[in-house]
Image (cartoon, rainbow, N blue to C red; front, side):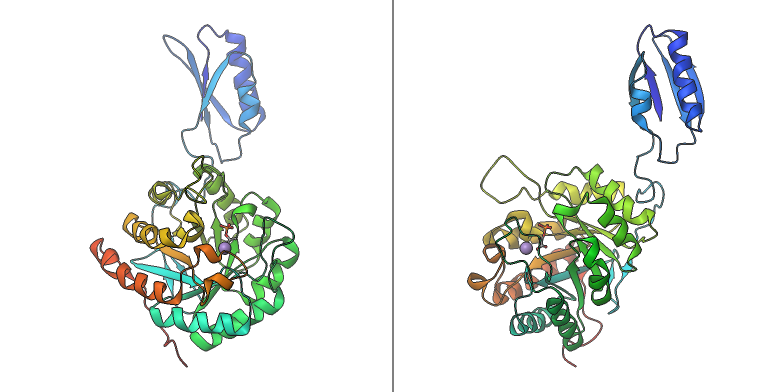
Length: 347
Ligand code: PEP
Ligand code: MN
């Protein structure tokens, strides 16, 4: 970290900076220049309280030489992190993993039919919310533990791994008991106690980007999980708020590339929430694979008009089949392939 002093800053002000750095337990290296002095902070372990330096009289600005997120950064770990799920599926390698299923688990028939059909089409992970973060308290809130049991049943029947959301610290233990991957939703990306609980729950974590979060904030949120000892974190681009009303969100394809540059963690793309409209999901799913996403997470429903949540952006089973067929050549064109199940879809 470099502390750049204002032109004409006094020796006393430079000494104040040096003292503040040393008070925090680091070493300070003043570097006088022709125009201004810069003070280097040596030994930054990612916990420097920047505001203590910015507030000192005579300081112009603070420049980060290494990123404030440490363990999730590619500087820290140059190799891609590969996350292996209970069914042998590996995320972060050559294979592009497809996660598919309804927004919410609604009934035994709905989740089992969807699970079988998406597995047959080549998905290897089943999504479905049992605890739903709904904008309105009067909307369907999910089936709770019954939903988790139905997901477990679908896993038994199909060999699909499960990803489902943990909404609060109270239900974290219960969700972790059932699921293969704990989803942290966009609305909870900066719920730090929840991130810490996820980092201690013993399961891989799929962390969704907050709806107005920068990539840096997403990486810092992931750092909370990793700092608790859980290194199996995947980062999910699911669209951000936007001034244009043509789509529910602005699906940020650049984020897929940027996160790969900045971090070793796998990137998951969610064009369902990213666009909010069924007609846009396929094209953006194709684009996300082309941009290098390690996995897709897609909402699929046997009868979208009757869905309890997010029907407008859910693909039909037939649309999902057609999309899967389109994804293979796109993955192949960039030297990857769509992951195949390691266990048969039936029995
Ligand atoms: C979901 O996956 O259904 C969901 C609620 O997503 P997000 O947190 O991205 O809105
Ligand atoms: Mn949804």
